[in-house]
Length: 120
Image 1 (cartoon, rainbow, N blue to C red):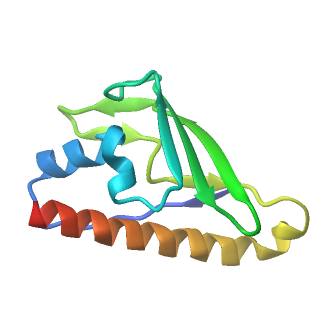
Image 2: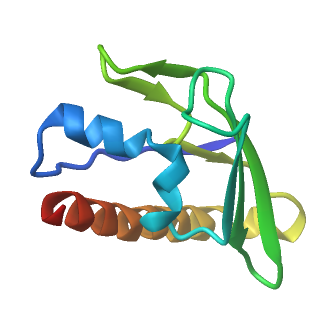
């Protein structure tokens, strides 16, 4: 299992950044996603499932993630920006490359997020 983790500095108050990052109903405004659906619909909470689809090599890739921690007071959230993946078959050979591609996508998404947050 591989893990990608990153830290980003955004020129905005921490409470505002946290609120925008965890507003999963609007995540498609800044994430490179084909589709997003929350289960149940409405504001996210621990246990909310996030169904996403992204454009993959040759076909769409679908993911279901579950919010495991969401604490606005301590500004703690677990699920969204730590990406875990396990390449299978021939893609095992491309594990390090896939990690870089995922990280680059996250960096682009965070740049869009930061620009929207600072402008708004």
